[in-house]
Amino acid sequence: MRYRLAALAFLAIAMGCAGVNSAPPAVQETLVGIESLGFRCGEGEADNVPSGLYQWRCKGEFDGVGSTVLVDGNPVGVAGITMVTDNSTDPNVARTAFARLVSNVPPLRTAPVLAETLGSWSGEQTSQVVGGVRIFAECADSMCRVMVNDAADPLRPLPLP
Image 1 (cartoon, rainbow, N blue to C red):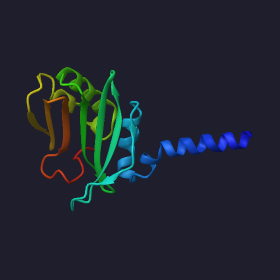
Image 2: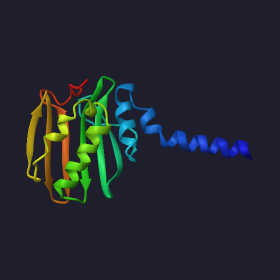
Image 3: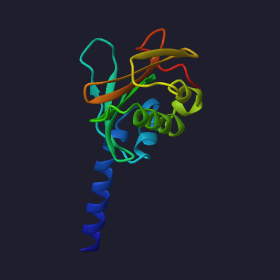
Image 4: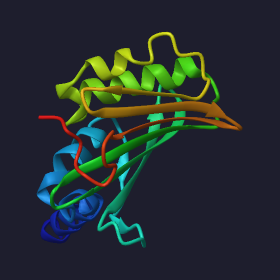
């Protein structure tokens, strides 16, 4: 009986981590960082365009606000991270959530200045480039969205250490 319980517990843990474990090593650390914030990441799915990128969808909450974090990447690295505050158009919520991502999730955490780009943002559509990284943000309809990708080529890995 104990063996069966232990085997079931191991299987449940393994299945819960499947999205991270099946990701290429260059993406795994990012997914682990997002999951450390209480999110659950699914399996990567091909983006169905000839980019060669896959996307992992992570669902969770930032301070009680349902949120989604999308990670685009491949074996070469993470090409982009998009954070969406589902059903909230409050730029303060999005700004705080993005700052938590930057503080805790590689490779964003190597560039804390990224969070500062939204310091006075009030929800309007904005796009800024910092050190070769583009930060796009907007609040519209029923959500706020903050996207980070390579400013020169959004299919290349983020130019962060």
